[in-house]
Length: 174
Picture 1 (cartoon, one colour):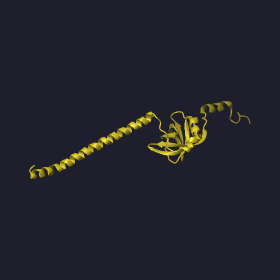
Picture 2: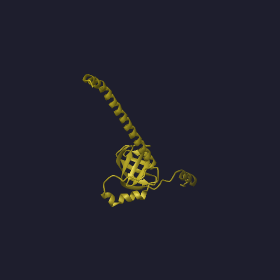
Picture 3: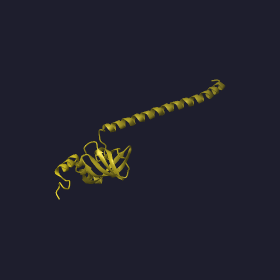
Picture 4: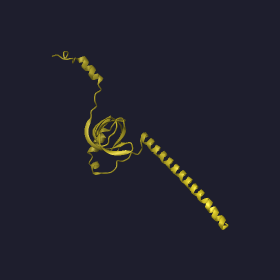
């Protein structure tokens, strides 16, 4: 049978290929990382990586559409969950992912021998700066409310003891 008889002519095949975006090369890896969702951190494992995203495995259930932070060495990847299946999730990164650097970290013998928290970046991103400023404002508000309540408590105690002290002073003639 000919290709035309099967409905596989050159024109329909070309239009099908041009309408589909070619899939970017993904590299299969097994690289441990840290994952932040909200305020909580958990362990994760990067299973595949491309310049615009990752597939990870984590014990934490993360809803589709959630923004997360993945840390590997000094690298921080801000991404959004675009799909999930059990413990696996597909992440689309906001910025380009440094594939070679992350893969090189996975092969570094020095990294395997050290244990400890990931190093922090020197300058926070705008999202992190905004979160830190919000936390500082919240802390300041809690301190101000606490100080106000403490002053109100002192005033109430002073008022409660003022009359009996006046009565004792009057009885003693002072």
